[in-house]
Amino acid sequence: MASTFLLFQLASISALIGMTFGWRGVMTKYSGFYDLPTAWSNVFWGLLLGGVYGRLAHDAVVIPYLSMFLDDSQEVVNPLNIIIICVLASVASHLLLRRDRVRKGSSQTTSGWALGLAVGGMVSMILIYKTIEVKDLFGFNYLELAVTISGIAIFSPRCEALISSYHGHLMLRGKRWGAVLRSSFWRCGYMIMFPFAMINPLAWIFIIPMTLIFTRNSNIWIWESIPSEGKKRLRKIWARQARMEKNISKEINNIKQIDDCSE
Image 1 (tube, rainbow, N blue to C red):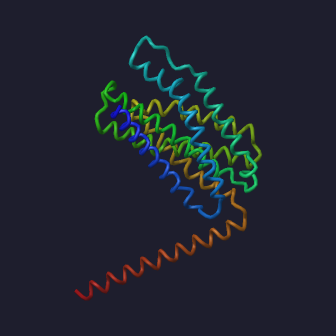
Image 2: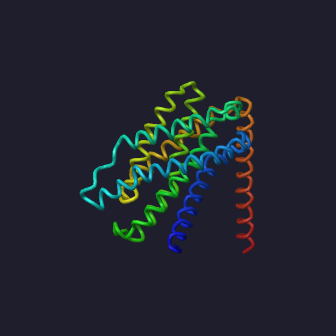
Image 3: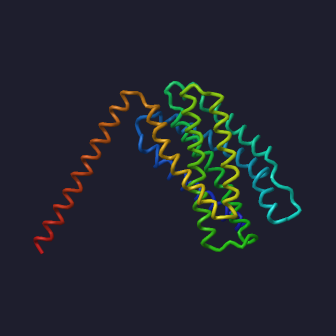
């Protein structure tokens, strides 16, 4: 019982760290230019959705996939299960992002990012817990285990955030069914790669570059959702921050030069 509780704590803390990195990377950058209460509301709903989504994925995908390697007689994972789970998750995300409070502020992209972070955080918690639980069966060393846990904790919430944010971006462009279909497609890839990454660290060679590429696109999606007046204000704020950082660096250099001369 104690070991199970410790595994749960480690998985929960790792998932929360990954969610924090995902929030600071994008949501902090645009702080003040989106509806924060709506974003936190989507975090709450994302935790609920992620719990159900993660449990279904655990029972229908992760367990059969791991059993396939541990027991040669076990059948392969049913692709239909992956498709059904991912479509249901995408439809649920769509319903959450089309609520009046989200559409009123045209905040589908930022709300989608917050929603996806929470969903991915719950899924990553389940994946991390299961990875630690089966580490002895697959003969993982501590380095492989650390790489796998870190990768799942950081990239699982971010990947789900990218999918949900892209979903919201397509909704703003009027592509409702296209948003559901495309997010379902990317979730299927997500649901295939991350269980594979649980037992093979080489999967991160494919996951990390794809995530970094689409992270750059997420800034474009969120930027396009901001009204023109907000964009002007945001440019002024960024320019002011750049000047302040430049002045601070100059002052630091001047202090260093004075210290060198005094010596």
